[in-house]
Length: 258
Ligand SMILES: O=C[C@H](O)[C@H](O)[C@H](O)COP(=O)(O)O
Image 1 (cartoon, protein in one colour):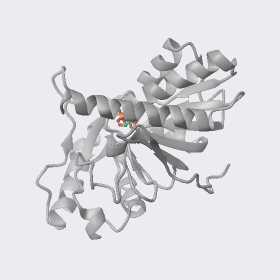
Image 2 (cartoon, rainbow, N blue to C red):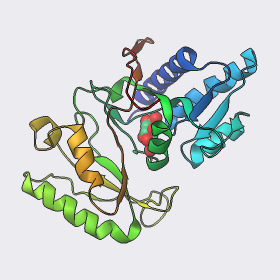
Image 3 (cartoon, helix red, strand yellow):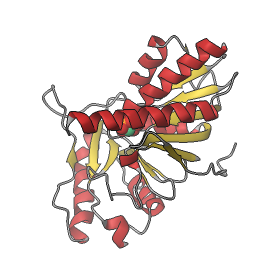
């Protein structure tokens, strides 16, 4: 990716994050703090508003990165054992389809993100224009990130490969994600591996039916501790556009127990 494209995407991430914070963050709330590069802008804006408007906010992190962001921005850090439920969580995504089903975990944070999302009255997704798609897998070609117990990785890979082969295969193999600047696999904040499940166009073509059936199937495989598929969890999405505007979906009410 060239510098100009990167800068365009960065601006779009910032626009979306700022707009989402301005629309949803209010005094006295417990906030879930997402992970990734877009979440950095959300925390920046939350901290700005907290200072300028003297807001009293409690922040629950979704990762080690988020925890450090909360601390370095002078926000009040807490955890789910102390503050539950969360009023609103603002988090990034790798891809978001037209039904607001989302793929997350491109940066290796998904298990804590999903727990925090499930503890939130509202989940607001933020991203640049490249994250919006019609169906999952349309733009995100790296597979569905899965958090997998280390000793179960071989078993999980065999089962996923068997499925991939049965639907015609994928040119890219499903494998344990390898680290950059460190030899060997990525180890998550929770001490597990990440497996990137290459599902190709299976969701579009029908082999995987829909995101909910994929999620149910993946969660039925022992060793898969969590998936990066967030199905019917997001209430609204914001996408920063190249022209400096922000496109947002309607906010939907979910029957999520709150
Ligand atoms: O594992 C990482 C998280 O799920 C991120 O929220 C997701 O990858 C999007 O990250 P970014 O905002 O950097 O594109």
